[in-house]
Length: 144
Image (cartoon, rainbow, N blue to C red; front, side, top):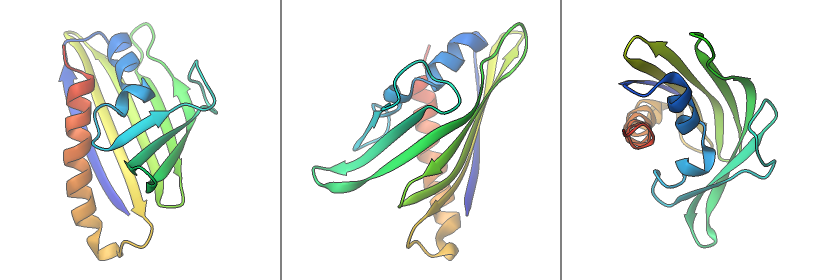
């Protein structure tokens, strides 16, 4: 399994950083050739399912994810979102924590990915590529 961690500090208050990193449809605008839909609708809570579709036309795959823990930040407490990736191509987990700081917030994003048919010896390459893609995504989502 490929595992990587990304951290960003932002001047945004924790509530705004949380809102941005959990705006699932907005993620589609930051990842090339990807769109995101939320078939279970809003608001997000444990049990919400969203699907990232990556590809061009009929050539592509769906990456369905389910929110299994949803605790928004409140009164100085960190926000915690846990996702389970349940697709036929991409499996694994993601964790997004948004911690308030004296000058804004600290976002910690951890991914554990397994891509079907990709040999395990390529996990370090997958982790490197994933770290770059998700770091860019997180940067765009948190832009002031």
